[in-house]
Length: 219
Image (cartoon, rainbow, N blue to C red):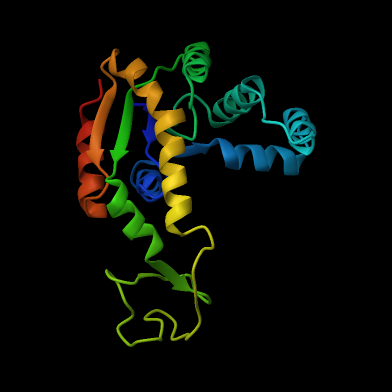
């Protein structure tokens, strides 16, 4: 059965991790608007050229361009591939556009899954993380230190790095943006009985199990 789901949650909620699991376990494809825009610009497609001109002018890419990119990607995938929408829709207008995009291709939205997080806990999760500069293995100040201090468990390197935007101010700003811009679409889908909330602060495996349970109820 082909599924079309939206995965919602603020940055750091674990959407990428869960999407990767769904791709691996179910052959689903994550449709990230950011990735699609970058790819279209790099490839120089007609929509990519339009997007580049808009971005070069310092303006936001229009809903029409983003919707066009999503439509093209769905057409390229074919009708029997399940997809995960990430980063779209963000507004009521985009939610309407997605309905039209799916309907035109004989698809419908099956689930809207929100990974709920507690802000202070999310701040702790994000600001404490760091990774090996050589192999990328992930660690955390409080939850996952290297077994030998200063030495990567995976490759033995002694060089580590932190993302510059993994700081409290940035995290709280992103949370505020999520509440202001993305959360308002939830009532739209809630009225249609499509929304399920999952504890995004739970262990990764537990979050995955919760999502699997939701997907198993499709149809």
